[in-house]
Length: 219
Image 1 (cartoon, rainbow, N blue to C red):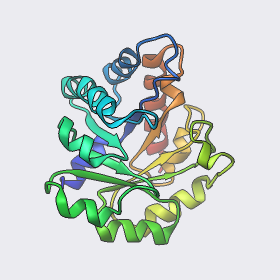
Image 2: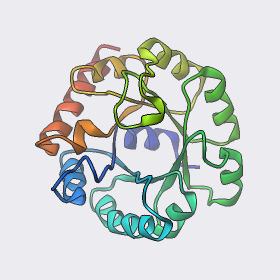
Image 3: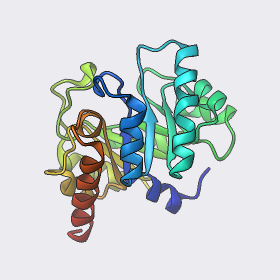
């Protein structure tokens, strides 16, 4: 299990990849711009990719994460994460249980888990999760299964207080509201469209980080 203080630092700004949102630009170029501008983590998410293709994408992304000393996670697929040499995996409701994955991965392998209630958060921590992705905080258009779902920053804060592991706010996070996430006790934020669809991914990343720091000062 990774050292918690170091993990918190690397969870400050997680960019979740989306090849479609990158448009005609190379998705790797968009991710690299964000990493160069200060993003501290990247998560490979591609629900439509088959196993072999996802592994190829992960192997393409790994050198970028290493170059910028960023945490590198694969969404859903811990087997692909291991095969590609990623730092860890992020698991959702339809994926294998945290406890089952924890039993078969190396001790330092990072396991993230989606949770939006205090009971789910406590269960994930008990089963061995290293951090939680909590949301949708403000609503999202990038995940069809949670369209219209908004938990708000008060619920985010309740989840943060319920566990000792770091939490990351996700869902509709922008420079205009990121300070609210920081003030709610989150260790960081995870974004998709705010960076992947931004005309200038580097500028968008810097704006998110600046607003994050302002929110931390208000805690």
